[in-house]
Length: 153
Image (cartoon, rainbow, N blue to C red):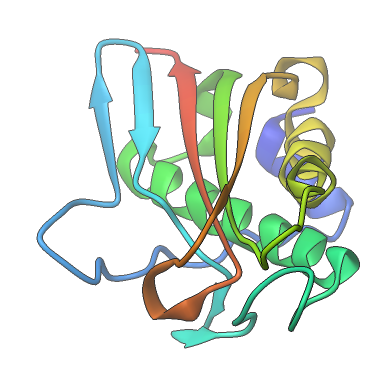
């Protein structure tokens, strides 16, 4: 089963790629690697998860925000590749969590991204990951995710 068929069978919908908010592109392919720009929890052009995790947002809500952010990364990748079926494996996930002082469960938040990628890509969705707590994120989003993917030429 292809990656796109697997996602569809699980009810996972890859949205249309967003419009960049600044002077950058959504994703760049260099050789077999594709790197996405950071994506946040945006649905239909609207930020759906704002604030500090551990204060304004629960871990469970931020987990869902990480999933949505990752879907937006996949949309960015698809906009360059034409199809997610060209993805051979997920290499690296970087996650930034808008964290309240003292919040230390960034890894639990970023499991939302990791779990989604394994659902879509199976074992090839397992990856290296960084989960970082930050003081602020653009537009006060709760989570930002970017991906490094290995792709077929």
